[in-house]
Image (cartoon, rainbow, N blue to C red; front, top):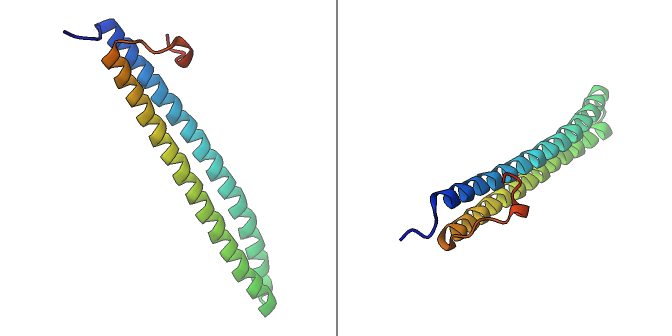
Length: 118
């Protein structure tokens, strides 16, 4: 005997898709923010670097090397932040899928407050 009717299964599927869409949208927004942050920092550093490279004395060459290192650190930090956001996305999608499976197994329908699609 089926524990979940077709209507309930449809509601559960819609709820799950809405949750996944929300998580994906939130992730995209965070990734865009991080990319914007990285681009802003990189542009500023590249501008400083170009200015220093035009002058070419030894002290300024050392400063240029320092800025290259700083630029690499910004990039590494951005990559780390992006990885964390992607990991969080995967966790939230897994959680939504687990909840949907639980709803399906118990025949419950998701709470209307947790899904704006109903």
